[in-house]
Each structure stands twice: as structure tokens, then as C-alpha cells.
Image 1 (spheres, rainbow, N blue to C red):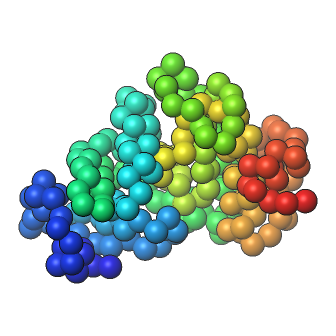
Image 2: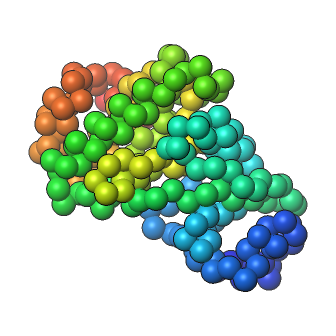
Length: 214
């Protein structure tokens, strides 16, 4: 939905209207499945609009706690009004790892870098728990290719952090493997991925965290 159409149909808070006034606001629909409305503002900010305030608030909390790492967006505006909540944050540099699917070797290298960055975050910075697991490592929680950004062949940050928190690193390993195979359309390179990550495939945890039945 175009932002102007949304404005015409809804009572948008003045703080959001003032921020977007005279700016170029473009709808983002690619690689986006949550049902939220997402907009690019002047290629500098991201606006999310959702009927599910908890998801956006959880994302804001994580982004605020990890702002010092420079791997997450900085919050600009969060406001709830009527049936919607609105979250404006800075846009990180880079494109999603989907852009590297034609180069599996580079993709594997970048996934390893992303996991090391993510799991290497000081857990003392975070007071949120991942809802799906128990552990003391910072995990993204939805470690899929569209949620990892790369800039100049280096990982530049993480988006869609509403499921992030302290937990079991296999939450991220499981979704990493799933997304890797799904986006490549093959499991031909999975053994290379596992070897590069230095892990052995754990079928039980993979199925549990990706909700795949045996």
C-alpha cells in the first residue's frame, strides 16, 4: 500500500506525519512476510506500521540495547495510535544476503562472518531472552538471508530483530541452514556450510527450531 493511501484511510499520528512530510516515502514489499507495512524514507530511514505492537516494541528494545555495536538500526520514533503502532528507525547500509545467492562460496563466508558477529555480542548488553530457546548467547532468532545485510563484501548489520535475545545458538544455526537451502534451491552446498561453520548437523534441534516434523 502506498503511504499516501494509508494516510488517507487512517488517523496517522502527527509526529509521524511531520517526520515524513516532504520526504520520499516508498513501500517495501520484497522479502517481507510479517504482514506489517514497511516503507523506505529518503533511503535513510525505515518506517514500520503494524497492528501487532509487541513485535515492533521488541525490535525497538533490542535495537536500543545494541545501538553501540553499530550492527543494528537506531530508533527515531515509536508511537502507538488507534489500532496501529509506528516505528521509524535508521536504515543500515547494504543489501540483503539474497544478493549473493549466485556465489555460494562467498555466501558461506558471509554467513560465517554474520554468525560470529551475532554470537560474539557481549551478552551483558542484553536483558531480553529469546522466546524459543534457553541459553546465554545472543541470537538473532530469525537468522535468514533477508535479515542479514552486506556492504562492500562485509556484513554490515542485522534487521528484523523482534525475536532476538539470549538463547541457544542452534536457533540461528537452524534458520541459517534452512534459509541457505531454501534460497539456493538446493542442499548441494550444505556440507560446505556446516564445515565452514565448524558444526555438526543436529537434526533434533534443526527440526525443533524450524518447526519441521520428522
